[in-house]
Image 1 (tube, rainbow, N blue to C red):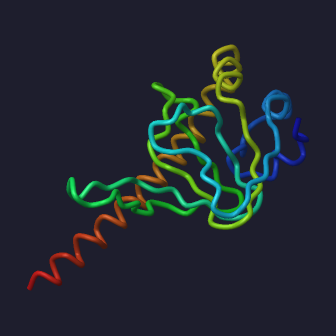
Image 2: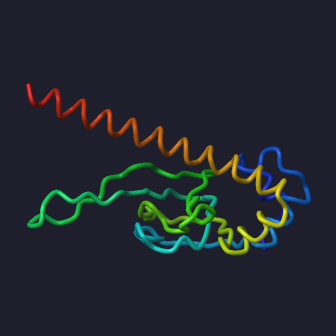
Length: 161
């Protein structure tokens, strides 16, 4: 279990009341990972939603550029202290949509996905607040992906001339 005061530090939980944060703390654990550790790959079952406590995690998308070429990983976002990742643990079909690998030694708070979904379904007020916070994470990730795409497209247009 993680302390309520510790979870309150995360902007993800802004606007949550004491009881809601306590219920989330009850299903949270702290985990540590070494640099280079692969937390999950695209398509893996989404078992946890994470809040990064220390370190840096790169979220990557696999790109296929031909049968004779190896799969390339395209960095989509960098998760740093205080950020959330793994929203797929609360959104069907509960499968990670990107890969996640530690850039350096990292610590995270893991919220068990199955227990979290059960809690959110039981307490709809908490469920609403939680999904609002999750949507902010998703929107932020989409914005970062668009910036990367625009940058890549811009470079390809410039280099084609």
